[in-house]
Length: 254
Image (cartoon, rainbow, N blue to C red):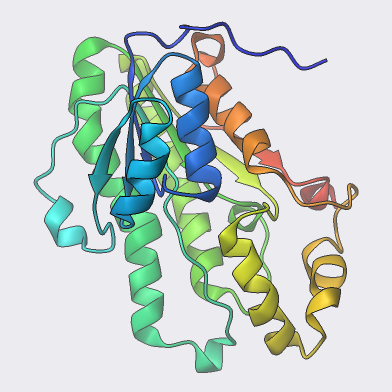
């Protein structure tokens, strides 16, 4: 039986979730709000962010995180930072558009660095901070046709560990969550892209490509990922830092 977190365990804490308008980000925003945090939903989709935030009386920040120059002088007074925003492109390296590669690394590596940089002074000053980076099993393993995504997630793993080492003396933890394929709009779009890249029908993509190495043959649900994020943000996880938590149905056990 699953035990829900105590109401109010994050009461008085503020949280910022990027890519919070849908999918994993929306689930994380709901989870942190349910635990008592005051949550800001950040997304390029302002309307979507407003819709999610309205569910629990949260705040919104419409922002294009790929515009990294605009983040360089940012300051953030947030206690919990969830770096979740991301995109995917499926293409062979020989055909991968260089500009798309740069944009994906800006969004999924440089933006988390700049947001972390902006949040750490506040966290250091109060002696508390939680940074949770939504990585992926692709932060630990590679797949063909995903050069930018795999590169970005591997880089995010390194950033998270350095943040853990620097933040530890100040009560700041930094961890990665590494799900396999999650039932989100991002994954739904990949099915068609993967079918084209591998030359197989769409109905075979989930079983033959996405779940081929899984011991548990199903997609991860966004709420399952969010439950782990919520725990990492709590006091119960205060000695957990520099870690990478897989939630991949056994994929990385091979």
